[in-house]
Image 1 (cartoon, helix red, strand yellow):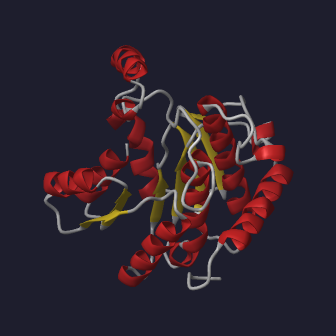
Image 2: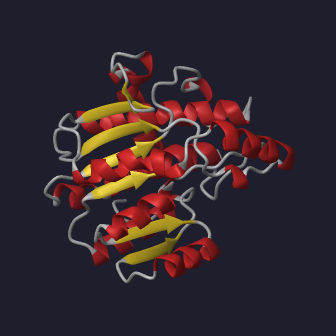
Length: 267
């Protein structure tokens, strides 16, 4: 979905920066696009230092950011700790998005009509934040980790939109089952099943990214929008609770304060 969005925006004349973990896929995208307006930055976004490096690069090359589209996620059958000692799904699926939105907010505010689009699972009420063990050190499960990450992104959107200094409109977007990313599933049996299901039931990628492409040109008017497969989500849902959003934001800032090392930005 990220690749499709990038190519569509390039076709409309945008300057696009794509961030990804695979150098080979990045080179393939650059070759496919053949467009000088495309930049690729290789980075492991589960690392705080890597996110900050990417932000520093973007700040060096741009005076403003019109749109930030957040796609990064990876399913891990077993619990993996990042270089920062964090549960990997939490770090990649949620924390990288938190940091990118926060650290790039000055450049977003410098754009005329900025938008942040967070692709996750808004509208799904299963799962939640495991407040007593956010890093899932005692009872890890890949579904549990993914559901927690999805709920964390819901709350991230609520917290971002609540900050008056943030000019960007924030869109939480659940595209539904899409023919995207199934080749990367680690279990080969499940991967084959997913590919079969995707061929029959999943939305084509162009259909899934069409709203993303349009929101970049025409951001919704409200500070926060929540869209589940084309339908607005009731923002009174428990998964969009403002008190929980503030609680998660406080947890995240405290976590970052404890983890950050001397020499990095804003420490």
